[in-house]
Image (tube, rainbow, N blue to C red):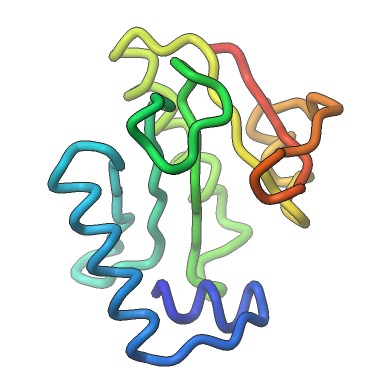
Length: 139
């Protein structure tokens, strides 16, 4: 799924070896509890993923210390427009809220409309890290 996410959604050229390195890095961050990764399954089939963190200075991406940050989200094209993405985002927001996080942000270059349907607002700020608009929500 990560390969499809980068290659198809972002039109980013990346080798299979590059995808493998990225997956290994993500898994290391999950193991070290820096990053949290959730998979959406339909039966035995993975159809989406979302990874998120709580910003802290020990993380390479820390733009708003103490805030939740949704780093990446992907839903297989065959399962889009079925309200599954909103359910996925809502689940992560509930998890963060249960862990005393009150504010969450994300950056998006083209999915702002989807995230606004999930309750996020465009903050009017641009990320210093990837130069994309920042969307935020209080939970």
